[in-house]
Amino acid sequence: MNEAKTPERSPGAHIRSLMRSLDRATLSTGMVNGDGWPYGSLVMTAADQDGSPLLLLSDLAEHTANFNADPRVSLLFDGTTGLAEPLTGARVSVLGRVKKIEDERMAERYLRHHPSARMFAGFKDFNFYRVSVERAHIVAGFGEIHWVEASNILSERVPELEEAEAGIVEHMNEDHADAIQLYSSVLLGRDGEGWEMTGCDPEGCDLRLGGAIARLDYDAPVRDADETRKALVSLVKRARQSAAE
Image 1 (cartoon, rainbow, N blue to C red):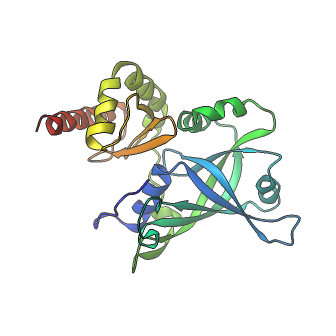
Image 2 (image 1 turned 30 degrees about the vertical axis):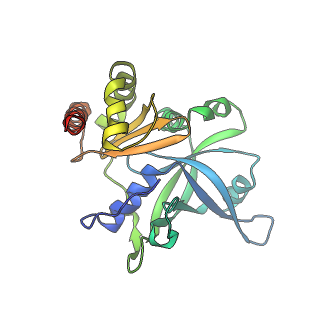
Image 3 (image 1 turned 90 degrees about the vertical axis):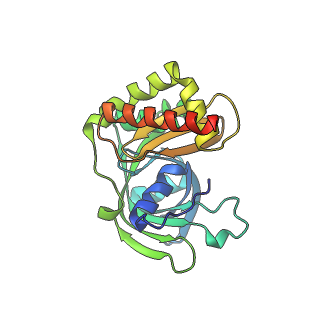
């Protein structure tokens, strides 16, 4: 998925946006049985409400053995796909420590983003993990290179919205599929029928159609279900006005 970096967006906000809008990354760990040699693997990701990466991983995987010995990891999020000149696009290496979680809300958030992963989630040798971000390095084109600390990357946690998210997503998919279709086709210019919402956070909502994903940002951050409803209604109005022009 490609996105243009707007001038007013800070490097930290740009990093958070990449983590939210992409569904996979390259996980780098140090080989426990290989004298610390770096080991890279493809993992499917979701971002928690604050932007922290969430993972579902097998105990049998090489990377799991590696970070069980040393929890320090790096995740490379690549936002350059499809660009004629990939090196002009944005990519970010996120450094942090990975930790196993037993949090139903986080697990469900991941599984809404990756429905096919439900078949693995119940296996005893699969577990959910959260990466506690410490800092990140973003390269977003010539002269746009920054190291950014976690305090400037992650957004503030909003407990009211965390609790309400599952209900909002279910309501939108069951009762407002037409609105979601307007978001995808009119506001995001994405093809296909049957887009569904997979998550919402303080800054926007996430959509999926089969293997395709899309990210739609709000005009302003929200803090609870009522503010989310108003933001979604505003986006519908904008989409209908654009479609009528």
